[in-house]
Length: 182
Image 1 (tube, rainbow, N blue to C red):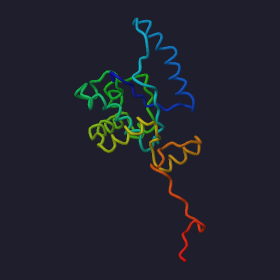
Image 2 (cartoon, one colour):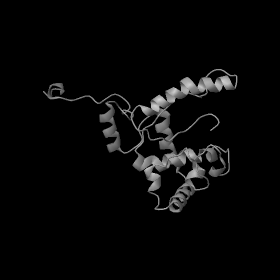
Image 3 (cartoon, helix red, strand yellow):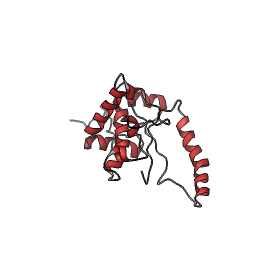
Image 4 (cartoon, rainbow, N blue to C red):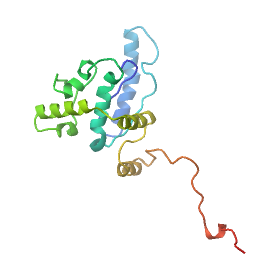
């Protein structure tokens, strides 16, 4: 996108993605600035990451990213945007940088079946509710998945991965706090 970049990646470990983004900031940005005689950051804001439950959200996230140029009015069709992976997934061109996720492979037994299934999903698009859920999670950096997925992730990360309930916690009532009825 002209103002931001979306990546849907499956890192091989828990530090790989962060280190990659750190490398981009330390090495690519100075290279780019030197090449184009400019200064400052290339990014609109800080790097944000959202952990997703791939089994439930991979295809939605992929569609969100690949249909973003259409929703933004930059192109009339997803395959027309040169910086999108849609043409690869739809079978219109091969992109050696892309390593297809197992969930994409599960769409069909042959490349033709996978590509046709993916095109059909893209034609359906995402509902306003699905778009809102994806935007909320990515803007705020919260995990995207089922409650069971979030609970497991909370235990693994030893931190909250979804927002806490709003407001003050309810008071605990005990026998000593009850008013007298005398």
